[in-house]
Image (tube, rainbow, N blue to C red):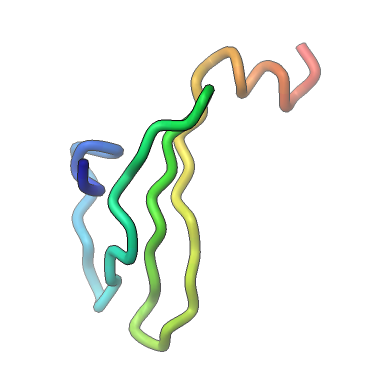
Length: 57
């Protein structure tokens, strides 16, 4: 699965590099990317259950 599967309306722009395709975790999806300078960052998509647990509801 690629970034488009994580966020269908998202496109890699401005030199972003997909370092690891999106993968499913227990309650979330994660994709690892890097900017053109090599700084890594993760794009997370939480399920409703995980998000509620994070905000304490």
